[in-house]
Image 1 (cartoon, chains in turn red, blue):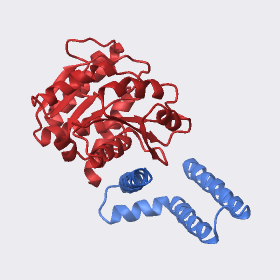
Image 2 (cartoon, rainbow over the protein chains, first blue to last red):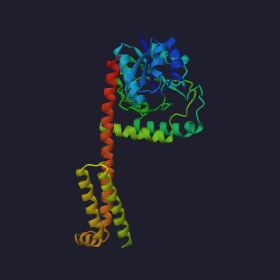
Image 3 (cartoon, chains in turn green, yellow):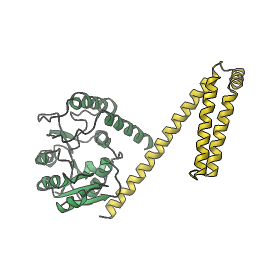
Image 4 (cartoon, rainbow over the protein chains, first blue to last red):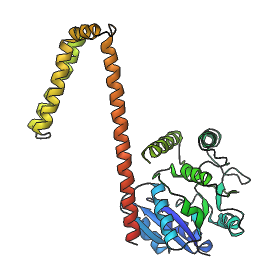
Length: 220
Length: 107
Protein backbone atom coordinates (compact mmCIF):
# COMPACT_ATOMS: atom_id res chain seq x y z
CA UNK A 1 0.00 0.00 0.00
CA UNK A 2 1.68 3.18 -1.19
CA UNK A 3 0.57 6.41 0.49
CA UNK A 4 1.67 9.69 -1.07
CA UNK A 5 1.19 13.09 0.52
CA UNK A 6 0.96 16.07 -1.85
CA UNK A 7 1.86 19.49 -0.45
CA UNK A 8 1.48 22.56 -2.67
CA UNK A 9 3.87 25.33 -1.65
CA UNK A 10 4.28 28.95 -2.66
CA UNK A 11 6.89 31.01 -0.82
CA UNK A 12 6.72 28.75 2.25
CA UNK A 13 10.40 28.59 3.21
CA UNK A 14 9.54 29.28 6.86
CA UNK A 15 7.16 26.31 7.19
CA UNK A 16 7.98 23.78 4.49
CA UNK A 17 10.71 21.79 6.29
CA UNK A 18 8.51 21.32 9.38
CA UNK A 19 5.52 20.39 7.22
CA UNK A 20 7.49 17.75 5.27
CA UNK A 21 9.08 16.25 8.39
CA UNK A 22 5.76 16.16 10.24
CA UNK A 23 3.98 14.08 7.59
CA UNK A 24 6.89 11.75 6.72
CA UNK A 25 6.22 9.20 9.54
CA UNK A 26 2.70 8.58 8.22
CA UNK A 27 3.26 8.23 4.46
CA UNK A 28 5.60 6.52 1.99
CA UNK A 29 6.42 9.60 -0.05
CA UNK A 30 6.00 13.34 0.40
CA UNK A 31 5.63 15.33 -2.83
CA UNK A 32 6.05 19.09 -2.61
CA UNK A 33 4.86 21.04 -5.64
CA UNK A 34 6.77 24.30 -5.60
CA UNK A 35 4.36 26.65 -7.35
CA UNK A 36 6.86 29.15 -8.74
CA UNK A 37 8.17 30.28 -5.35
CA UNK A 38 10.68 33.12 -5.27
CA UNK A 39 12.22 31.93 -2.04
CA UNK A 40 14.04 28.71 -1.05
CA UNK A 41 10.94 26.54 -0.53
CA UNK A 42 11.97 23.97 -3.16
CA UNK A 43 15.53 23.50 -1.87
CA UNK A 44 14.39 23.23 1.74
CA UNK A 45 11.69 20.70 0.85
CA UNK A 46 14.26 18.61 -1.00
CA UNK A 47 16.68 18.75 1.92
CA UNK A 48 13.87 17.66 4.24
CA UNK A 49 13.43 14.55 2.11
CA UNK A 50 10.52 15.40 -0.14
CA UNK A 51 10.20 14.75 -3.86
CA UNK A 52 10.01 18.23 -5.38
CA UNK A 53 8.13 19.16 -8.54
CA UNK A 54 8.66 22.70 -9.78
CA UNK A 55 6.16 24.94 -11.53
CA UNK A 56 8.21 27.48 -13.47
CA UNK A 57 5.51 30.10 -12.87
CA UNK A 58 2.98 30.54 -10.08
CA UNK A 59 -0.42 29.13 -11.09
CA UNK A 60 -2.24 28.69 -7.80
CA UNK A 61 -2.98 25.98 -5.25
CA UNK A 62 -5.43 24.12 -7.49
CA UNK A 63 -2.87 23.84 -10.28
CA UNK A 64 -0.19 22.65 -7.85
CA UNK A 65 -2.52 19.98 -6.41
CA UNK A 66 -3.36 18.80 -9.92
CA UNK A 67 0.35 18.39 -10.76
CA UNK A 68 1.08 16.63 -7.46
CA UNK A 69 -1.91 14.30 -7.74
CA UNK A 70 -0.98 13.39 -11.31
CA UNK A 71 2.59 12.62 -10.19
CA UNK A 72 1.27 10.47 -7.32
CA UNK A 73 -0.96 8.50 -9.71
CA UNK A 74 1.92 8.04 -12.17
CA UNK A 75 4.14 6.76 -9.36
CA UNK A 76 1.59 4.12 -8.37
CA UNK A 77 0.05 5.66 -5.26
CA UNK A 78 -2.84 3.75 -3.69
CA UNK A 79 -3.84 6.61 -1.39
CA UNK A 80 -3.20 10.31 -1.97
CA UNK A 81 -3.31 12.86 0.83
CA UNK A 82 -3.65 16.60 0.24
CA UNK A 83 -1.98 18.64 2.95
CA UNK A 84 -1.11 22.34 3.39
CA UNK A 85 2.42 23.73 3.59
CA UNK A 86 1.71 26.32 6.25
CA UNK A 87 1.41 23.85 9.16
CA UNK A 88 -2.21 24.71 9.80
CA UNK A 89 -3.12 21.00 9.77
CA UNK A 90 -1.99 18.42 12.31
CA UNK A 91 0.02 15.65 10.62
CA UNK A 92 -0.75 13.39 13.60
CA UNK A 93 -4.36 13.31 12.33
CA UNK A 94 -3.36 11.65 9.05
CA UNK A 95 -4.05 8.14 10.50
CA UNK A 96 -7.62 9.32 11.28
CA UNK A 97 -8.08 10.09 7.59
CA UNK A 98 -6.43 6.87 6.45
CA UNK A 99 -8.39 4.51 8.68
CA UNK A 100 -11.77 4.64 6.83
CA UNK A 101 -9.93 4.08 3.53
CA UNK A 102 -7.91 1.15 4.84
CA UNK A 103 -11.03 -0.42 6.31
CA UNK A 104 -12.95 0.17 3.03
CA UNK A 105 -15.56 2.30 4.80
CA UNK A 106 -15.04 5.14 2.33
CA UNK A 107 -13.37 6.05 -0.97
CA UNK A 108 -12.66 9.61 0.11
CA UNK A 109 -12.08 10.99 3.58
CA UNK A 110 -12.41 14.72 4.20
CA UNK A 111 -11.14 16.55 7.25
CA UNK A 112 -13.80 18.72 8.87
CA UNK A 113 -13.31 21.66 11.20
CA UNK A 114 -16.93 21.52 12.30
CA UNK A 115 -17.27 18.11 13.95
CA UNK A 116 -16.23 17.06 17.47
CA UNK A 117 -12.83 18.75 17.44
CA UNK A 118 -13.11 22.49 17.58
CA UNK A 119 -10.76 24.74 15.64
CA UNK A 120 -10.49 28.36 16.65
CA UNK A 121 -11.79 29.98 13.50
CA UNK A 122 -12.10 33.76 13.12
CA UNK A 123 -15.72 34.53 14.16
CA UNK A 124 -16.86 35.94 10.79
CA UNK A 125 -15.46 32.88 9.07
CA UNK A 126 -17.28 30.52 11.43
CA UNK A 127 -20.61 32.33 11.54
CA UNK A 128 -20.80 34.15 8.20
CA UNK A 129 -18.49 32.92 5.43
CA UNK A 130 -18.63 29.17 6.14
CA UNK A 131 -22.43 28.96 6.60
CA UNK A 132 -22.80 30.92 3.35
CA UNK A 133 -20.36 28.60 1.55
CA UNK A 134 -22.22 25.60 2.99
CA UNK A 135 -25.51 27.01 1.70
CA UNK A 136 -24.08 27.68 -1.79
CA UNK A 137 -22.62 24.15 -1.91
CA UNK A 138 -25.96 22.68 -0.88
CA UNK A 139 -28.17 24.79 -3.18
CA UNK A 140 -26.08 24.82 -6.34
CA UNK A 141 -24.07 21.60 -6.15
CA UNK A 142 -26.13 19.38 -3.84
CA UNK A 143 -23.15 18.97 -1.51
CA UNK A 144 -24.12 18.17 2.06
CA UNK A 145 -20.98 18.40 4.19
CA UNK A 146 -20.15 20.03 7.50
CA UNK A 147 -17.00 21.66 6.10
CA UNK A 148 -17.43 23.37 2.72
CA UNK A 149 -13.77 24.29 2.18
CA UNK A 150 -11.47 21.77 3.82
CA UNK A 151 -8.10 21.25 2.15
CA UNK A 152 -7.09 18.25 4.27
CA UNK A 153 -8.31 15.14 2.44
CA UNK A 154 -7.36 11.55 1.63
CA UNK A 155 -8.33 10.02 -1.70
CA UNK A 156 -8.26 6.41 -2.79
CA UNK A 157 -6.53 5.86 -6.14
CA UNK A 158 -9.83 5.20 -7.94
CA UNK A 159 -11.30 8.45 -6.59
CA UNK A 160 -8.25 10.49 -7.52
CA UNK A 161 -8.42 9.09 -11.04
CA UNK A 162 -11.99 10.33 -11.39
CA UNK A 163 -11.18 13.87 -10.27
CA UNK A 164 -9.97 16.45 -12.73
CA UNK A 165 -9.08 19.71 -10.99
CA UNK A 166 -9.82 22.45 -13.55
CA UNK A 167 -9.62 25.46 -11.26
CA UNK A 168 -6.10 26.74 -10.70
CA UNK A 169 -6.98 28.96 -7.76
CA UNK A 170 -8.81 28.42 -4.49
CA UNK A 171 -12.03 27.32 -6.21
CA UNK A 172 -10.54 23.81 -6.47
CA UNK A 173 -11.92 22.95 -3.01
CA UNK A 174 -15.55 23.35 -4.12
CA UNK A 175 -14.75 21.77 -7.47
CA UNK A 176 -13.29 18.63 -5.87
CA UNK A 177 -16.34 18.27 -3.61
CA UNK A 178 -18.66 18.74 -6.59
CA UNK A 179 -16.85 16.09 -8.62
CA UNK A 180 -16.84 13.66 -5.69
CA UNK A 181 -20.61 14.05 -5.31
CA UNK A 182 -21.22 13.87 -9.07
CA UNK A 183 -19.20 10.64 -9.26
CA UNK A 184 -21.17 9.28 -6.27
CA UNK A 185 -18.04 8.57 -4.26
CA UNK A 186 -18.38 7.11 -0.80
CA UNK A 187 -17.37 10.06 1.37
CA UNK A 188 -16.63 10.20 5.06
CA UNK A 189 -15.85 13.28 7.12
CA UNK A 190 -13.55 13.01 10.12
CA UNK A 191 -12.89 15.71 12.70
CA UNK A 192 -9.64 17.65 12.34
CA UNK A 193 -8.02 20.53 14.16
CA UNK A 194 -6.90 23.59 12.22
CA UNK A 195 -4.47 26.08 13.67
CA UNK A 196 -4.84 29.46 12.01
CA UNK A 197 -1.58 31.27 11.34
CA UNK A 198 -3.16 33.36 8.59
CA UNK A 199 -6.71 34.51 7.98
CA UNK A 200 -7.01 32.63 4.65
CA UNK A 201 -10.03 33.23 2.44
CA UNK A 202 -12.01 36.37 3.21
CA UNK A 203 -15.42 37.41 1.85
CA UNK A 204 -14.02 38.86 -1.39
CA UNK A 205 -11.97 35.67 -1.80
CA UNK A 206 -15.25 33.75 -1.51
CA UNK A 207 -16.81 35.88 -4.24
CA UNK A 208 -13.77 35.27 -6.45
CA UNK A 209 -14.21 31.53 -5.94
CA UNK A 210 -17.82 31.77 -7.14
CA UNK A 211 -16.69 33.85 -10.16
CA UNK A 212 -13.93 31.35 -11.01
CA UNK A 213 -16.36 28.42 -10.80
CA UNK A 214 -18.76 30.17 -13.20
CA UNK A 215 -15.99 31.10 -15.69
CA UNK A 216 -14.61 27.57 -15.56
CA UNK A 217 -18.06 26.15 -16.24
CA UNK A 218 -18.42 28.39 -19.31
CA UNK A 219 -15.05 27.70 -20.92
CA UNK A 220 -15.18 23.96 -20.25
CA UNK B 1 -24.32 73.56 -25.04
CA UNK B 2 -22.02 73.57 -22.00
CA UNK B 3 -22.02 69.75 -21.93
CA UNK B 4 -21.07 69.66 -25.61
CA UNK B 5 -18.15 72.05 -25.05
CA UNK B 6 -17.00 69.99 -22.07
CA UNK B 7 -17.17 66.74 -24.08
CA UNK B 8 -15.24 68.36 -26.97
CA UNK B 9 -12.60 69.60 -24.52
CA UNK B 10 -12.16 66.03 -23.25
CA UNK B 11 -11.76 64.80 -26.82
CA UNK B 12 -9.18 67.51 -27.57
CA UNK B 13 -7.29 66.40 -24.46
CA UNK B 14 -7.25 62.75 -25.60
CA UNK B 15 -6.20 63.71 -29.15
CA UNK B 16 -3.33 65.82 -27.79
CA UNK B 17 -2.24 62.83 -25.69
CA UNK B 18 -2.36 60.62 -28.76
CA UNK B 19 -0.20 63.03 -30.76
CA UNK B 20 2.25 63.17 -27.87
CA UNK B 21 2.39 59.36 -27.70
CA UNK B 22 3.03 59.23 -31.46
CA UNK B 23 5.77 61.82 -31.12
CA UNK B 24 7.42 59.68 -28.42
CA UNK B 25 6.96 56.63 -30.70
CA UNK B 26 4.81 54.84 -28.12
CA UNK B 27 2.10 54.04 -30.69
CA UNK B 28 2.24 53.11 -34.36
CA UNK B 29 0.91 55.16 -37.28
CA UNK B 30 -1.98 52.72 -37.74
CA UNK B 31 -2.90 52.95 -34.07
CA UNK B 32 -2.88 56.73 -34.30
CA UNK B 33 -5.12 56.63 -37.37
CA UNK B 34 -7.57 54.27 -35.64
CA UNK B 35 -7.90 56.39 -32.51
CA UNK B 36 -8.03 59.69 -34.47
CA UNK B 37 -10.88 58.26 -36.54
CA UNK B 38 -12.66 57.12 -33.37
CA UNK B 39 -12.32 60.46 -31.57
CA UNK B 40 -13.09 62.38 -34.79
CA UNK B 41 -16.37 60.50 -35.27
CA UNK B 42 -17.21 61.00 -31.59
CA UNK B 43 -16.57 64.76 -31.94
CA UNK B 44 -18.82 64.90 -35.03
CA UNK B 45 -21.55 63.03 -33.13
CA UNK B 46 -21.29 65.51 -30.25
CA UNK B 47 -21.37 68.58 -32.51
CA UNK B 48 -24.43 67.28 -34.38
CA UNK B 49 -26.09 65.66 -31.35
CA UNK B 50 -29.46 67.44 -31.87
CA UNK B 51 -29.63 66.52 -35.54
CA UNK B 52 -28.82 62.88 -34.67
CA UNK B 53 -31.47 62.91 -31.97
CA UNK B 54 -34.06 64.20 -34.47
CA UNK B 55 -32.97 61.58 -37.00
CA UNK B 56 -33.36 58.82 -34.44
CA UNK B 57 -36.78 60.18 -33.46
CA UNK B 58 -37.83 60.24 -37.16
CA UNK B 59 -36.79 56.59 -37.40
CA UNK B 60 -39.51 55.81 -34.87
CA UNK B 61 -37.61 55.83 -31.58
CA UNK B 62 -38.66 58.06 -28.68
CA UNK B 63 -37.22 61.54 -28.28
CA UNK B 64 -34.54 60.21 -25.96
CA UNK B 65 -33.37 57.57 -28.41
CA UNK B 66 -29.77 58.70 -28.02
CA UNK B 67 -29.99 57.45 -24.43
CA UNK B 68 -30.95 54.03 -25.71
CA UNK B 69 -27.89 54.07 -27.98
CA UNK B 70 -25.72 54.88 -24.97
CA UNK B 71 -27.23 51.98 -23.01
CA UNK B 72 -26.65 49.64 -25.96
CA UNK B 73 -23.04 50.81 -26.15
CA UNK B 74 -22.58 50.02 -22.44
CA UNK B 75 -24.07 46.54 -22.92
CA UNK B 76 -21.72 45.99 -25.89
CA UNK B 77 -18.75 47.08 -23.78
CA UNK B 78 -19.70 44.73 -20.92
CA UNK B 79 -20.04 41.90 -23.43
CA UNK B 80 -16.60 42.65 -24.85
CA UNK B 81 -15.02 42.73 -21.36
CA UNK B 82 -16.66 39.40 -20.54
CA UNK B 83 -15.42 37.92 -23.84
CA UNK B 84 -11.90 39.07 -23.00
CA UNK B 85 -12.23 37.49 -19.52
CA UNK B 86 -13.13 34.17 -21.15
CA UNK B 87 -10.21 34.40 -23.60
CA UNK B 88 -7.83 35.11 -20.70
CA UNK B 89 -9.27 32.17 -18.72
CA UNK B 90 -8.64 29.84 -21.69
CA UNK B 91 -5.08 31.13 -22.04
CA UNK B 92 -4.49 30.64 -18.30
CA UNK B 93 -5.75 27.08 -18.58
CA UNK B 94 -3.30 26.36 -21.43
CA UNK B 95 -0.52 27.99 -19.42
CA UNK B 96 -1.24 25.74 -16.43
CA UNK B 97 -1.17 22.65 -18.63
CA UNK B 98 2.25 23.61 -20.03
CA UNK B 99 3.41 24.31 -16.47
CA UNK B 100 2.24 20.89 -15.28
CA UNK B 101 3.75 19.14 -18.29
CA UNK B 102 7.14 20.74 -17.63
CA UNK B 103 7.01 20.00 -13.89
CA UNK B 104 6.31 16.30 -14.49
CA UNK B 105 8.74 16.02 -17.41
CA UNK B 106 11.63 17.64 -15.55
CA UNK B 107 11.23 15.38 -12.51
